[in-house]
Image 1: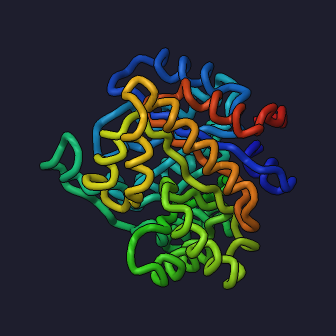
Image 2 (image 1 turned 30 degrees about the horizontal axis):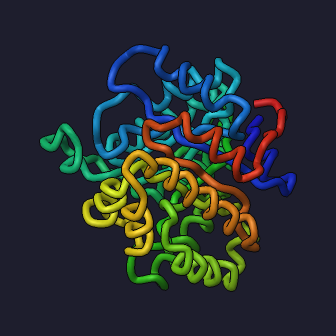
Image 3 (image 1 turned 30 degrees about the vertical axis):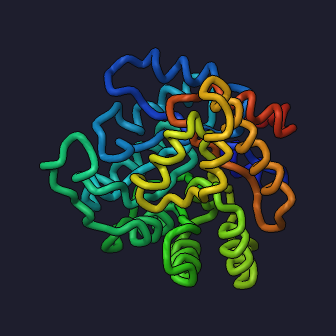
Length: 306
């Protein structure tokens, strides 16, 4: 069963975190991250060649996490697979006991370490959601052929409240939820004012009653990281006051300030109707997740089975 689904449906405030697979074949790297995150979060997302950089497959890393007793969230991007491979991997994931699936588009190959690679994009992320929902609920693949057994999956999608125009971001959320998304994990939140505006629009359309919203968080390690994310990362919204706050403390204290900002953001999200949890994307800083969760008074986590 999906521990994440159980937590969300119980009405508890959920905590998920991200595990980036290694740029190599050593399973020990994934298992070490599992040890760091065990007991501190409800489920662990495994990124799928994030930023189009070749890494251990998300499906393999999810299987390792499952074996280590965690509840993995398999991230799959439509960038690298056609509809045959996507549906095949969905069936394989369910067979391995993976119960959470996040359907994504994926960054364009030109951003990664294989810029000459051809992006597939046979389906877009919304079409992928529809396909997975039909496989699970109707036991059929695209084209209508029946499956011998349907996959058992809790289906999610991503949302970016900070891209423009804002009204379109809510329309896109409507489409993803209508296509089958049961939970939504958002882009990193630094601009709380803009997030509240997006959430209000979503709540007004009844979307927070139809899907669980988990606010995305990335603890800043330095002022330089804050400036980089503001200026170089597409879709990010890092206000100047956050950058000034990070610049206002000595370099050796900036990681602590980043954690403090993250905890303050969680406290704000916990008070917002329509927010069902948080998703912490620590970017190779998994050691910070436990401290953030503890300081945000989100421990202990449930011991529901994965």
